[in-house]
Image (cartoon, rainbow, N blue to C red; front, side):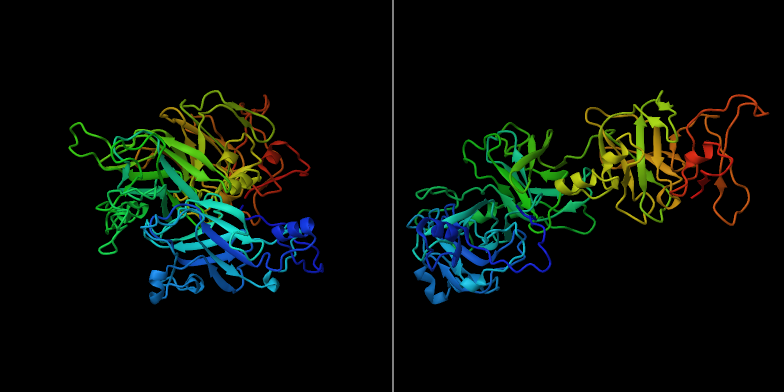
Length: 602
């Protein structure tokens, strides 16, 4: 839902005062609307809160991006906890922009906590507060985005909410606008979540004891090199009761959770799997003593895909391609026992509307760090060895296990055509983009889309994020889907502009833990196909040996196998140092002595 907007109307169009949908229905059905319709807006708890609901701050917005904020109004709420009135935990404190103050709902442990849809926090505004809009696509004004900060206590927060609007001034005269789930405790949460703002990892294997995670890290790249951080979230945590008469290891139906030294239920929250101490010189945080424990049965453990832990990137969506995780061993290990780790995991992402599976991982260990990086030999890449003045531009490339790149080269027009090569998933050094953004890039002629270098179309090109690029900063390659590869030859079609190509190229392989250089090649041209290694006698060139005031220009060029240039012209794909945009390399080989079509060196 986030990010939708209609095209702006005519510049001089009068402002439109949108209607409230529920009020419009009242008018159509009864001929008039209630004078209080659309003035009160709120958010309800839709999950049970074991003790009482604590709201530190809440913000309402008219738009999906949480930019057009509701104007100031009068705070409204369900009953405030009367036992805490002397401490002034009032409803106004949820709107005072002070995160240290909060509102407390009227419910308690002895009464079974807060039932779903029992309590709300809201705001009453005036009729004049409905915003003027010029976007004809937004016919109705409504609460489209909410930001919420709840208590950090696991037993004083709700994991799901519903936004509502009142059609009249009665307590139950509200209509639900939207339901939202996976709300965090103790952190700001915005809903609806952006595309790629939410990520979660499921246990894809049953565990004899509740699943535990000592520490989990998320990365945007496939090789766990670019860590991304956000708000920890999970499908509940161990010990938090789910029914009104339930006593757990950390919660009592008559006493709840003691405030001092703290609720034991809080010790198993998701945040303790993402807060390890980071020490200088250590690449990863030090896990434990805190950890996350899934809300599964203490005696029978977790069923397959019963629990998940994840991250909410809130206002800065990220793409996750790799995770690093440490799961505790069971008591008495290495002797037989009841495992509390999962060797199979599933990674899911939020599309903006639904959850979708992105990756599945197997072979995840326990007792030490484990990650989802590719195995040795599964990934190969080409990287720039020269420093580049601008972005690196690669139109096409192919990798081969044959030492001579196989029988893959045919000459066709000015470019040549590449076929064959190993298959795989195109990868690159560029930052991972959200799905919709990546899809857009792949539709461009030139963009941050690795597939553009493997689409058999020399007119399209992958372009690096860096520009200028330091040595080895930009790279593009393939990730094998099935087996380790042994790449012995590559073909490359770089951009013709000298500022956007590297004359020296390095072929590297993934060792399982790092990139290892495999071979170095120099003399790589631009604007044409180049292959390496090149056998002796397979490439010939003319080298300008004197300075020119203007770029070197050629109107026609042919190569012959005989010394008198009397035999047949050698037919082969052209190579060159590069060319100016309007004067491609192919022009040098069309032998146009009148100079109508020229090649001009870059």
